[in-house]
Length: 301
Ligand code: NAP
Image (tube, rainbow, N blue to C red; front, side, top):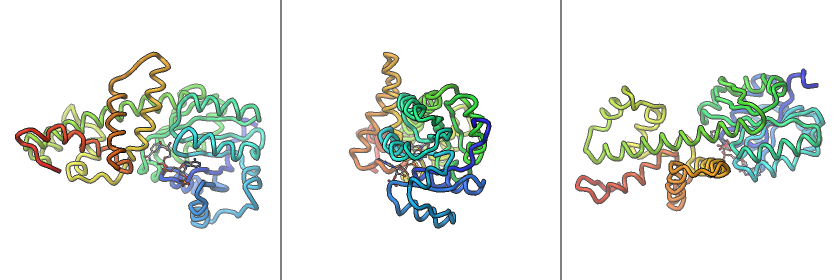
């Protein structure tokens, strides 16, 4: 069974990431159905992609050889898996593209294994832009034969696909990735807030910083918008806060506290309290600007 490639996929979770994944799987002839907590979203995608109408969930899941999940957080993933675990056939696989803790991945893998179902943790990076283009970077934790069996599914949604080791190692990779994402955001937001307070020409400043050793993706893609006080596009800060809590608990299991994680959690929790949870993570500059508010050059937002 494990020699046969997965090619009858259901996408469960049609948020900002799951919707484009479903479209790309359909374009590659691999999608048979979709499912979402809010049913209207599933109906809309089902109509858009002209998918087969199943009698009910049991009918749909029992015909799949793979469920690709992409939901918000650990408890949500546990809830959705419990909705279909009894319908999936032994020999099928669950590929989870949500960002959850390595422990949740291992626990679900054990639960599913008891029913003869494989589990692959496959968190992604590349944002909604990458999901739309089918160019996500996918970090996979799985047995090698399962990883190979899922290769066509991964190729339909991503361009950089890396087998990181056994179940849980994909999520561990994502956790360290998110520490760096938070660190770069801290560096860029602090820098640009200070540059503004130095009364620098911000257009020239962005060009100079991008061209030299300080240059980075976040600066290139979010620098201009954050200077213009625009925080609508990109990666919701509520999701980064959730991810950083995973990073914090993963470090705590090693007996370590990383100040970068703890400080970023404090900052993003503050932004949530200020009702900015739906904004891009570059909204962190709001807090960095406040640090300069009592200085000589300060300008109120
Ligand atoms: P999103 O747009 O907020 O969508 C979340 C999805 O999860 C929706 O389909 C939602 O269903 C479902 N959901 C939430 N709670 C649920 C529950 N209790 N039971 C069942 N379904 C539930 O999030 P997203 O941006 O697609 O992100 C999905 C995952 O990918 C997250 O783990 C995120 O960290 C990760 N990720 C996101 C990005 C990004 O740039 N957005 C990048 C990399 C990784 P409803 O429609 O019913 O609310």
